[in-house]
Length: 574
Image (tube, rainbow, N blue to C red; front, side, top):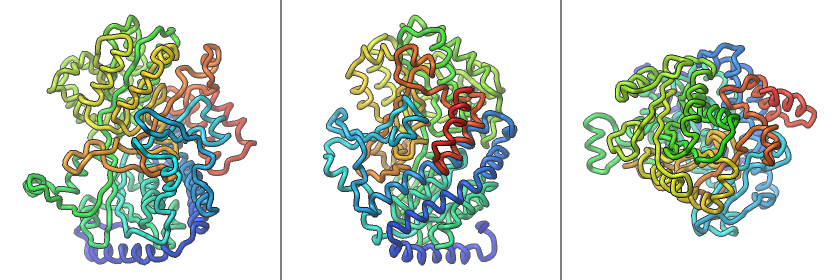
């Protein structure tokens, strides 16, 4: 269906669409858990069948050469992310259907501040092999008991007959697994049927998405529409829509909630939102990359410079979770050496166009406000802003999400726990948003900090926190939660309200913590780290990312031991 707000009969078409989803909701209430699980397996097969077309179309949207290693990003942040989620979610449904404890094989340990940590990576033997050395855990809110956690895991699928209406999903336009993942969360975590309104950027993928969801559309559970903002507004205001979920900017969120122009200002001033139904959201922000000083080798400096460059340049920097502000110690003896390595990494990373609408204008705005901006090369848009002052209340780089290849650098004094504490405070108090925060630390530094590091992580008010791993890896971990730190309001939404992903369907969650190896194999092993992972395939400098991404996607669709050798061989050549 392709509708436009001024098209004849558009209102009737939307009425009919929502009526189909309302009918589908009644059928969904009568669908048993075993059948719901089978539907997930059907969607898995449908996704695998169109994966090649998905990636070809995505590469075309992003103007990537078909032979570029960067196409690997489209495999991993596209069908691979959806397939791993489908596999994880169907396992949760299987356990629920069998009356088993959803968390029966899951490690649960204490976390600081009266929290619990639920290990979600590695989850099985395949995880231990494919992501060796990477770990992730979901932390609960303080005070939740293990009995409460186990009793509520499964969310609405514990009472599947209690459906909750029809949801509108306003799809993201930058990462192409986001729209289908958000729809699946509405259907299985919220127990709502859903209409997905595509961002116009993703319209070329409409037929791919329809093929993916055909098993659900055939039952009246999911519908997909295209069109302009008027279509989204009409759906949001439709009385048949019970709730809204969106991924995008805070500006778009506020337009949906409060309205635009003078009417929007009046609604906000009076505290009376134009949208009166529940809305959840993921809205990005200004993500920090905190580098803890230590004694690094030249190889460490080069590798972690590539790591930071990846956090900024993945998807041309058009990620809600892109690292934007590098926080570094002014007293670190290797500070200048690291910044030199970073400039080189930014300049030599593979060239790619600034494909997302408005990217060039956002970059130019950043440069206009920072006359000393550096242009490291690689592409015309890559920009480095050094000398940013964390005490300057007027510094726009701390409040503006650039959504492009612009990286800022700010310095703080100190070389020990005092630097860490100051960096955490700056991340919490000076940077807009709470979606994700990154920390990079040498193993010796981590050992010296002891429990101080975990306590500092507990103080960081971010929905996903990584140590020696990009927070984007948390997005791709299906059993992890994804979303802002809890507590935001419609009046001050920051990085959004609510979570998605969460394939264990956990309740009472606060954040996800991801950790990874400081060095890739074989250097990790030679220096005593218990990790066999080579350079991750999501690094922008990974030469075999496209082939590895394809092999990972094929494996996610049909995990088989005999397919692992080819996958490992490709990954090791990266």
